[in-house]
Length: 202
Length: 202
Image (cartoon, rainbow over all chains, first blue to last red; front, side, top):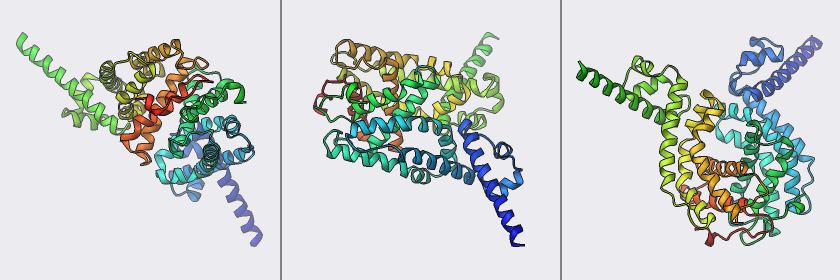
C-alpha cells in the first residue's frame, strides 16, 4: 500500500516537473501558448495538468519561479568582488542572455500575475545588482544623484534593448555584452567624472 | 444626387475619423480592446466599422499612424539647434510622455503589424533623433564607439523604463524628464570625457 502510494507520488512529481519545464519552454517561445499545448509538450493529459494546477496563473507562476531560480544560480557563480565597474561588466556578460530568454515568459507573467508577485520573484537577482550598485556608489565610481532602483531599471532596460536589436538583426549577439557594458558604465558614471575607456571595462 | 452622395461621403469620413480616434483611445488603454468596443466608443455599429476596415490590423495601423503623426507634430515644435546636449534635453522633455502614452498602442501594433511596418511608421521620429545624435557625434559631444541605431534604442528604452517606474509608483512624473536626460546624456558621453553636470543639462 505504502509502496504504491510512494510510486504514485513519484509519478505526480515527475508530471509536475515535466509540466513546469514545458511551460518554461512553450511560454518562452510564445507568451500566449495554451495550457493544452503545455500539457502536450509535457507528455501529459489536460486532466493531469488541471489535477496539479488550478489555473493558468499557477502554471505561469511555477514556470517563472523555475526560470528565475536557474538564472539566480548562474548569477551566483559570478565574482562580484573587486572594482565595481569590472564586476558589473562580468554580471552583464553572465546575465544578458538570461534576460533575453526570459522575455516572452515575462510577457506571460505580466498578464497572469499581479505586479507585486513579479517583483517578489525578481527580488533575488535585483538584490544582487542593488548591492553591487550600492558598493560602487560608496566607492565613488557610480553616481549618487539618481536613485538605486532607477539605475537597476536602466540596466534592465538596456539589456532588453540589446535583445530587441538582436531580434531585428541590428546587433550581432557576440557584441551585445560589450555594447550593454559600455552604455551602462557610462550611464552610471557620476557627473563631472570621465566615462571609463573600453580598455578598463574588461 | 451629387449633394446626397457628398453628404454620404462626409458621413463616411466622419465615421472613419471617429473610429480611428476611438481606436487610439481604446487600444491606448488596453492593447486587447475588441473591434466591438472600438465601434461602440466611436458611436458606430460593427457593420459600419467593417465597411471601412477589412481587419483588426487595418484599424491598428490607422490608429498607430494617427498617434505617431500627432507625436511628430509635437516634436516638430522642438528647437533642435545649438548644443546637441541641450537639444537632447529639450527633445526628452517634449517626447517622453508621448512614448508613455503610445505604449499600449505599440503592444497592439506588435501583435497585428509586421515589424517592418512598425519601423516604417516610426521612421519620422527616429530620423529626428538620428540627425541630432549624428550632429552631436560630429561636434565631439556624443560617443562614436557605439552605432547610432544602438544609441537611438538606448534613448527609447530609458524613456520606456521611466514609464514603467511611474506606473509602479517608483518615480514621480515631474522628475521623469530630468532622470531620463541625466541617464542618456551620460550614456552618450564619449569614453574618457566627463559626464555633463546637471546644471549644464537644462
